[in-house]
Length: 249
Image 1 (tube, one colour):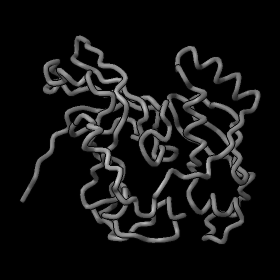
Image 2 (image 1 turned 30 degrees about the vertical axis):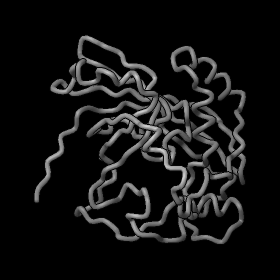
Image 3 (image 1 turned 90 degrees about the vertical axis):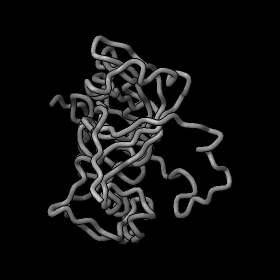
Image 4 (image 1 turned 180 degrees about the horizontal axis):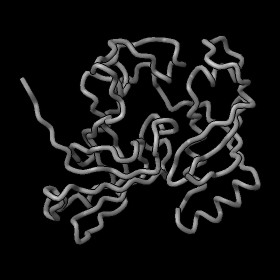
């Protein structure tokens, strides 16, 4: 049976590529997003009453997660298990699924009414820029929060938070950019605290035996994350991350 799903809009976020996106919503609570509706859905009455809710569910498409030939894997390696152990794809939140559909619970900060229709201002997003959105539903604490639910192999947030510091150059660049990008310092800090490195790089940095994919010493490897309109350059050693600079792109 064929099912046709039509996106209702697109979300604009600070994450311009897959690398660096928080692995779950609200891990970077300040990370902003703006949802714009496509013309046929940009009707003020369609969001009437939504302002009464603090959080909403976004149902979206992993539009950059497709594999060649449309294939998918029944087993995946969740980052939470170090990238070494496999579980079934339906026991994970991997974007590589039979149908590349994702869901995130994010904070609704404001509804702006423009000449082109309503615009939703959000925070706590873990979604790539230009992602198509299929649907919006209000978050209901009395039914969506289940205190007796079992949490499998992810019983709590990752406690291995990284210590983030900034070079003088990066700190000055951030102060200058915060005039146009509010909360830039906490956004960058929250993203890096969650250690966006691949599991094999984190394991090697901690001297844990793991598959080696590069000969570059971890402490000398410069990482880059495309955020907003810059490339965030940083180094990592163990659980310490040092931001070097914000290169314009």
